[in-house]
Amino acid sequence: MVNAVNVTHARDVYKPKVAKQMWKPFLGNGLVPNDGESWKRQHKLIMPAFHKLRIDAYASTMAEYTRDIVGEWVEGEQRDFRKDMVDLTLRIVGKTMFDTDLAHDSKTVHDAMVHIIEALFDHAQTPIPAPRWWPSERNRRMVGAIDAIEDVIEGLIEERRRDGRDHGDLFSHLVFAADEEGGMTNKQLRDEAMTLIFAGHETTAHNLTWAWYLLASNQDKVAKAREEIDRTVGDRPVSIDDLNNLPYLDMCIKESLRCLPAVWIFAREARKDLRLGDYFFPKGSILAISPLALGKNEKYFDNPEEFRPERWTREFERWLPRGAFVPFAAGPRVCLGKQFATMEMKVVLSTLIQNVDVNVLDGFVPDIIPQISMHPGERGMQMRVQFREGAPVRLGKGNKTGEMSDVHAA
Ligand code: HEM
Image (cartoon, rainbow, N blue to C red; front, side, top):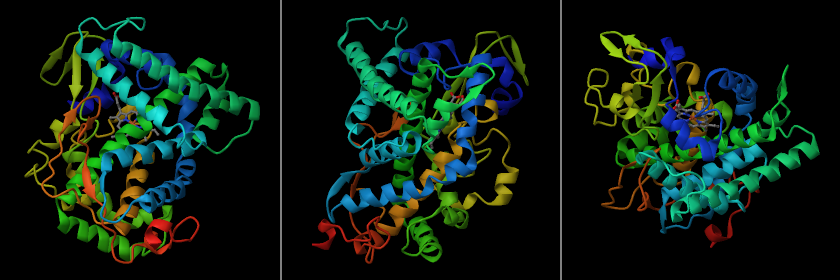
């Protein structure tokens, strides 16, 4: 059934009108809410930006930025791991997609995202959503937040058009991509840039947060992953060539996406009357697919509550029915950033495991808040920084500069 909606009947379903309405003020007609011929054209223009070679080139940036944040951590301090991951993934998006350091815009973008997501969630739960001009406090905050991100994006568009050269980032591709109808308008660029900033960091940050939590609760799995990383990478920075040689880490990531997928639900609307197997869906029906519910289905995953990366053998994956594991959706509307995100999770987690203990505070149980993406809420994911003996970042090995940071040299 899931595979029918995602793949074989993909033409018979659209993104639900209610979701489009919810996204409109924020993502406009960007790839996520777009549909039909307009989606096809935009998808064709944007897809080459996600070519494997271009994406592979970002692995070193991902590793460098992860080492940078670990370099700022102080032995023994308590941190909110979720917040660190949101900052890190936003910086990675800034560099790889826009060749800019979002560090100084990071607070603007981050605060704006928080207001937007709160407002979108309210909006999704209200039968008659408020229009953009509605003078409520929350609506005003959302409009202000959107304006703030738009300012950042408009600056980037202007700069790129003036400069006229490909920076090797994803946005360069978008600005200069053209087909027989020409290139994208500034409005289309704005919508796609918003989409990439939004889709490109939140979900990855939250999946990293859940992977961390699941690993922290299963120290025997951390030990296995660490042994593999030490053997394969040692204390040099993780590189793109290492990633194929970390199969156990790969299994841990798949298992975390099964147990606690950040995109816990997505939906489609039937464009016409649909018969799928024994079920009939009249035109306009909403079909919701939940990777979270699928991951708990005993038909596919025995003992589903157990975090068991070892289940992800080749034989198991061959046996698993199509549609049983779809954290990135599937078919024509599959996540465009799937490869980017998978690589990012691998690089970030392996760099962290190389350097610090994987833990959450003793007795800390996170909240699980199923909003647009599933996250641990305001209490975050509290951890205690404990460097491993001989951690490469502390020793200055694999640091960008090769120098010991002041904090850790002390
Ligand atoms: C672990 C992290 C990620 C997960 C679990 C994830 C999951 C998903 C899912 C389930 C969808 C389909 C949503 C729907 O159809 O309603 C989607 C769409 C999309 N994702 Fe991701 N995503 C992740 C990271 C990323 C990243 C890093 C990027 C960009 C660099 C990205 C860009 C997109 C885009 C552009 C779409 C829309 C594709 C289309 O409809 O043509 N995602 N993602």
